[in-house]
Length: 245
Image (cartoon, rainbow, N blue to C red; front, side, top):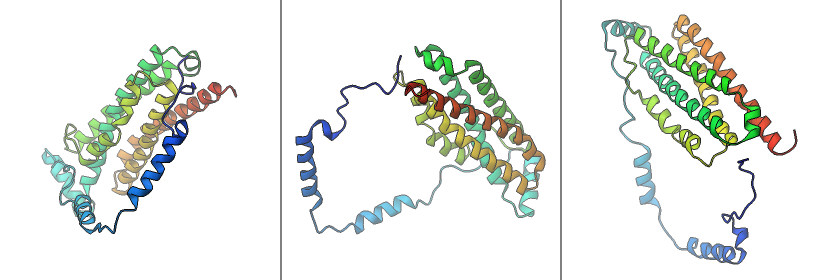
């Protein structure tokens, strides 16, 4: 049964080489005592990099007359409709990635030789979650189109979310990872997803778009179920592997 808790010759810690470890620490002290050194020039370079004049992409201009009118109306009311379009684009990209993540998790659970995981995890539930992620994607696509925006455009927040979540698919597709490790990776996405749907609903309500907020209440409820189920599976697997359940 594959699991991450197997003991072996892990040589990453200094305790495996106490003599060399002590020598390394002594050498580090010598290296850090050099000086005096001025870091003013380095701080200037770091400050310039940390405060760019440009940003990661822009929110696309509405591609229809209806979208222009909608955006103009919101501007008159003192709102910034581009924030809503940005967040809708972010959720759209995230839900599309969610489908792929669940596909990878389903494949891992179906193929791995782990009796405990097969006992705890419901493949049918995972497939159901995957289908709901797809439903959320198509709902967001329809909403974006109804506002006169382009659902195929990559908004800035969608781009950043993709960058932030790059490590999750790698964990799921790594042959050596266990089901428990993969579930913990998916839990990261589900917790982020829940928080982001809550922000989107509040944004819609505050912009006077209560009908949109109502449409998004169902996906939020489903995402909460996803997160709670994944959390319960993680707890049960960890306890069973530890022999305490």
